[in-house]
Image 1 (cartoon, rainbow, N blue to C red):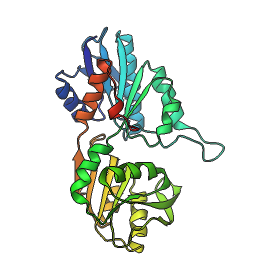
Image 2: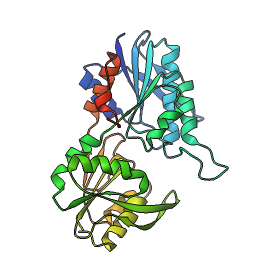
Image 3: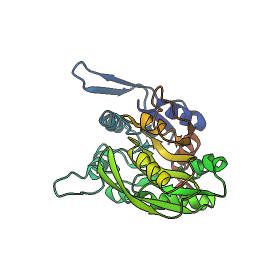
Length: 312
């Protein structure tokens, strides 16, 4: 089967970079809205019998980008695509993987069901909030990791007295991966989430006094978790030379202002989502084009992804 790359509107620069890396042109498609707000999508080139990869993170606005991906998948399926894969550098709803109370939706499971129902035969994602999400999918989920790329970006920042910090218990395994690559100790901030934009910290496990923290997480959303972690680290006597690394820089609401108020020397994140216009953080963007292009090329030629996966 020949290869086709189709881009949604969520991150066209990344899609174009991936296509260029693979030496193919983006398949043109029309994405527009009817006056009542309904999305209308149409492919403008044949994909019949082709191996099609849809590049579309479900970044904010999540619902628009998710529905757009579902419609693109349906259009490709109806146009006779031979094989259909969604490449979602950022997968929204990943935090809604369980019920904290008795009357909540499990959003991650519903999204997984919708993706499969649209005709997608495989999903590729990068640094999911929870690796357990794979169990929600009825189609194969390839969970890639940008941690080695981000660790290399952060390597010039760290010294012998640096410490990798997990800002909550959910980031401990992630912090251990960074610590192993950078040969640094780990500290853990114990956080309790009060709401989507408010957290409370109970304490720290590990030695941070006199050390320069490198905070690592899978995403930066409102910045509340990072803000609370930094306050706790400073109170515990860390050096005010703090770095922050995350796979996905969503930077929603007042995240940029929150983080600008902190003693952050450097921030690194991938280009899984578009950088917010006018943001003023000292942000180093790490490109995913080579990682995602390599994954697509290997899937297209039925070769192993083992060294690219998050649990490699």
